Image (cartoon, rainbow over all chains, first blue to last red; front, side, top):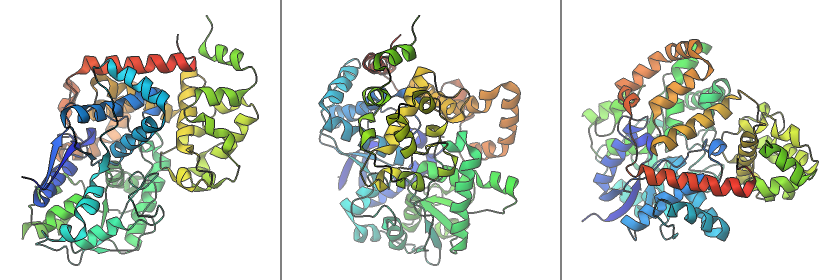
Length: 298
Length: 207
């Protein structure tokens, strides 16, 4: 029996052949090594992400996340919901807070859910995978399965926005959260000081305002180089995608020569725990993390 | 036919603050703003805002309805939540800004062709179709939002990136045929329709 079990909300980007499919691969591998069992919430839906508000408004958006909670309560009673995507986690937390503090919104949301034969009771909390790792397991436990420490690799821990604000990880500061650096050190890597740690990559505006977003992304990558990092590591699928994918665009338009791998914390852990490059989702990198592949291949 | 915009104007006369408090998500917080400007200074896209949040809030109090609702400003929000955590009065600024954008969009007063407005609508319409986002169709819709010619140009410009993602198994060309979706789609759609119906009735957006 697995030591810990959770109701799992992977989110759209983690689906097969979606933009963060390698995140899911590495999370599954990491959880296997840590004896964490993830049971997917049956028929979960999109959270609306950070850009859903303009057309979706308030109540339809509340209904989206409330449906995910209601499905968890019905099919996986007593289980906590765990999300790996920053936006999914944030949306669920926001909605839970809104519904648990407003009788009117709770009543209206349940009226909408009733049309799908569901009801929100508010019994299931939502956690981010990072919270599960550091709060339910703890750094000492996370260190135990390390068989291939990532010695000598320097990482810029890019926390970004949505796992950090407005809720954040308990005990961490908004301006300088330390958990990601600690995770890097737990698997034997070196976390460099990094002044863009909590900067915004532009989020969904990478699609609509490419110039403004790419200015943000450029600063995030440049700072990683300036501090001697070889790779960036992040807990957020949109941060990962934006900071990795647009490097070639920025190089083309601005004459830079960026070639900075952008990884998920779970990929670092999977490699350090002795998994293959494929099991760690390293084949999903557009910018190859050669030194991690080397370690994984040893 | 009277539009939702005309009805709202008539109902609230010149009291735009009252209208915002009634119809905009978290709008009841607007009167709490003390005009310190920390939100403006904390915004990653601060330079791009014609009216930073605290100015929008003062304009609301001053009854500048058309200027606020037709502003490009609130479409610059990246949802980074810096303003929320730094606001000394703990106003949910990000949500108020999203709420203003949504209200302006639904009244038809938001700037036409505003790229984030278009992107946001495309995203929502994409996700409600099958209950989950179809990333391929979303990308294509974005490329082609400014017409066919521009779409081809955009798609070619991002061709290398797209092929790289396909190769890395992070983009699936077969999604054009349908892609991921939820099983109980009829229940899902009934829920979304019901939620929209209640909200529109409450905020005078019906019809």
